[in-house]
Image 1: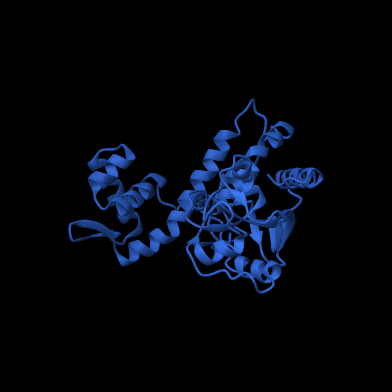
Image 2: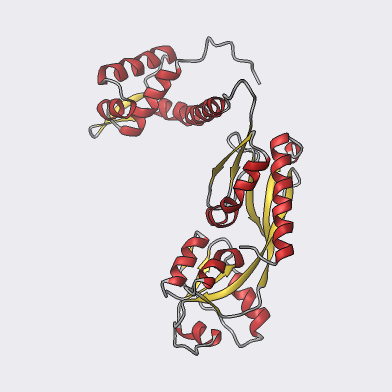
Amino acid sequence: MKRPNGKSIPSVTNLAAFDAVARAGTMTAAARALSLTQSAVSKQVAELQAFLGVPLLERQEGRLVPTRAGGRYLHRVRPALAELEEATLQAQASREAGEPRGHLTLSVPATFGAMWLLPRLSSFARQHPQIVVNLSTKIGPVPLPSPTLDAAIMYVPGMRDPALWYQPILPLKVHPVCRPGLGGPRATLATLLETQAVLHQASTPEAWETYCEARGKGRLVARAGPRYALLSMGLEAAAAGLGVALLPDYVVADAVRRQALRRLDPEPFAIAGAYMFVCPRQHQHAPAIAAFSAWLAEEARAGEATGRAD
């Protein structure tokens, strides 16, 4: 990669102004977003266009939109601006009596993060107060390596990338659940699957079919039904009486204790795959990653010892 000498790098202020105008569509709206005057934003965009030697914006139907060249440039510049901002925030967060701090930027599934990881994270903070853990979430596969992520927790159903390192955290064990009283006080799972909506999860689209084949022995049939991107959506839908859901232990445990849901099968059913901590293989021994993965392993063992995933 070519080492930058600074002469071909425009002002970050000018880049931010161009990005703001492209997002807002007008100089006035961009100025409000940046807490600047309209003339200041206009001047910054003009300086950037002069620096590059190409027009970046044009007016279409009363709005300012990127030109073809401006659009290509913006596509490359926006990720760099986001990464620069993230790096700056991390550097600012690490100022503490001159002591360097570790950082771990992690992507986690939204429901897993809220219901399993965050309730436990205080113990990691006590053990490793020098490490700042930044969390984000993404629906679907998380691309690694990533310029904005150190690692990810994700549900891994099968095949693995040899360039990545995987540490199992939690097997995926599910229960069919519904709101108490749905279909009548004595309604069985077989009856409910025939008479009520069957709620599906986008992350495990074949889970119901697999469950019915294994547990039903031809007696259970899961029909098509609503599909939810988040496990928390499936949880709320089941609790609201919208149908029968097939959800992990850690998702339904609290609702079952509160009698907001009832389990329709007392034995958990193991779905292929598991939640795993994943990072680029060459980074698995980095201090923050190694500390976090070791802590996750302890938490997973503790959960196995108590028989609880919640």
